[in-house]
Image 1 (cartoon, rainbow, N blue to C red):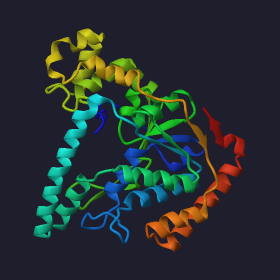
Image 2 (cartoon, rainbow, N blue to C red):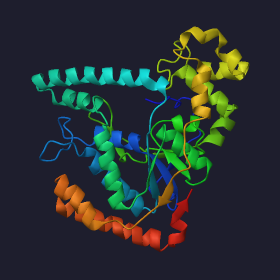
Image 3 (tube, helix red, strand yellow):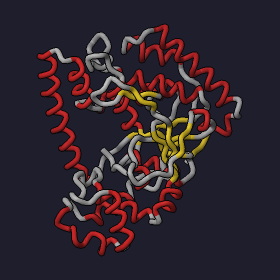
Length: 346
């Protein structure tokens, strides 16, 4: 879910892929894979599958979007979630219940033969499994793209990597990276240029957005700690419902007037499932690691064909073309820029 700060953040820049050339971007892997699973589907909502009925939408999206990034001179590194904080259990349970409800509605739409409803509910009941994650890691390995296993939240790890200046920005659809302290957040990096509006046969352009934390805080006239307080009122993964009756502008006004967490939260203590100070601590002191190495390698053609074509029934012709694009991108950007500039160690 993530926190919705869209109404508060107006300081955002619209970019094109070429504007990110030469940048190292830490991509929230779970967020990206979920987007691929949700969006890359057939007309009735059915995901792409191999002959054995195994879902392959996530692999297709990961392959082609990553190739596109490398072709444009971007240095991607994917960051995978580890164990979430215990207080996230409520949100995880809520998501499972919602997906089960969507599954029932999908089956009802299937009986009616309602293609549009089938597609809507199929996307809503999407689940990212541990098998999907392991398959994605294997694909990144043969593509020569580095990935980092976070001990906790992937967005927290990506944010930490921006603070260390090992990466230029984190990339996610959610705004949580800013709460974790990411210097820069890039949104819409792993989605296509167009998106279909829910329930309508209309598509809209989805531009890449850059949001810089310092500019956001300056514009709002608050500190990062106060931004976290605002987010807690709106609802985070650790208190999904937020505080009813208090919107973004009201929360901002309250936080700026009362400043200190004790004074801000005191009148609303009974409306939080856990102590708001505990939530603040997760954002301010997340579980992250320095144990990673960012190294981009030449793509492995044989490994790519073996994994995608032999194991998951991808078209040999399409995978060969993807490999050629990836290899050319590596040659033109990684090698010509000088390999030393493409290696970073923690």
